[in-house]
Length: 232
Image 1 (tube, rainbow, N blue to C red):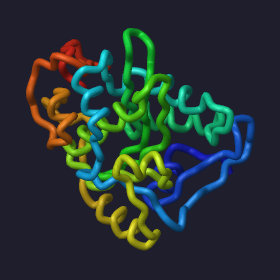
Image 2 (tube, one colour; image 1 turned 30 degrees about the vertical axis):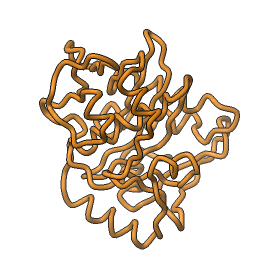
Image 3 (cartoon, rainbow, N blue to C red; image 1 turned 180 degrees about the vertical axis):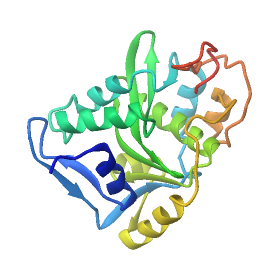
Image 4 (cartoon, rainbow, N blue to C red; image 1 turned 45 degrees about the vertical axis):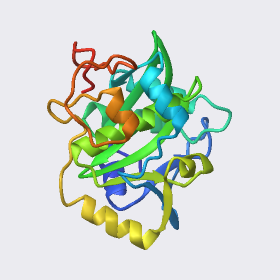
């Protein structure tokens, strides 16, 4: 049976996600880790170097401007679980509003990004990439700031890696995750909260998202808005 976007969303609601063996594999298998990686929404670690990069870095941030480019960049590595079918499925989820990306740019070059799936108040982070120092960390910082602003309760990272652990992610048993997921699916959050745009000061501080304007460094741009200080 072929996987449809509807089947994929149902799997996420049950705590299951798909992976392929390789880029060229035609088989997809379902995964439900015994131990699950999550980011506490208020637990992202802003290091001194990341804070400096957020405040002074020569970059811009967009949302949903180049979803396909982020997925392609995530798959552009020697070993990947993202094959053609998975790419097509997530593109369909994106086109129907269930999958989103955060992009980090230096000029016209895409230097970092992250994408994932949104259901209820849960965000399921799928993959991220970096083509310049700190690119993926910037994407995560802006993503988590947005999740707080939009009322999300669960940020699922699937697995815990040393890199994610250094940023504040943690590992929980499957039973605990299932309880958190069930709760997260009973309400709604917004990935595109009204009148929200991050300023670097608030992102660097890890503070709850505000509605300030006039980012003076690391300007956040929108894929759907002409206001260079808004990400929406």
